[in-house]
Length: 264
Image 1 (cartoon, one colour):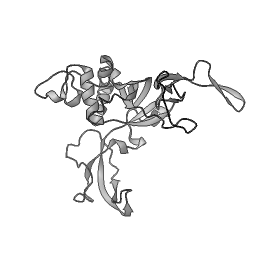
Image 2 (cartoon, rainbow, N blue to C red):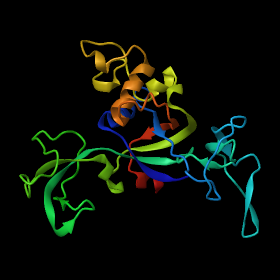
Image 3 (cartoon, rainbow, N blue to C red):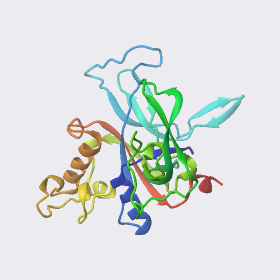
């Protein structure tokens, strides 16, 4: 059982928060694009025969499979993955049942930005660092207002700043997802119930709405699947739903705790 971070956009983090507050009403699934190996185990390129086929979902291990470790037979647990019908190559999905995922989400922190003297980014720009004033972080917007990020105009200015979720350190995490089911499928194979489990709901703002509502037609849809298609393109870019990639679909339970409290 592994634990690892997982990032969500603000609307998706809010949908998970809804599940914490009112179980059964929020987000309990997520889909991530599956990355495939580019070479076979021997270093060769992949090829396909029409009579044999390409990639398809599979189950690895389990069912009496074992490996030898220091002369001892050790059972190989069952995992979900993919295998190539022509080349015979298989690999595990990056997430498996029982994994613990600690949510990286945007938050607000009190402090100031300051340029790091003599240091540049990989792109050759001035490197900055955020100096925290040891105030507790918060996840709701501060009532006194906040700054979206660093700027020359705000250099050294003390205040609340919005921090991007992808930079959240482990010790600040507040939500843990326990993976209960893993499937590999095409994106467009999502069912009505699965789309709702992704956080789509009947009434609400932005991309989380799935019935036509008001005059904001471009953010509305007639079915949960259509709403999820809009949501997916909004997060991953135009045309990514239409490309219908292979994805790993995770079902999870939600717990309001720091990951190290769960691990303790």
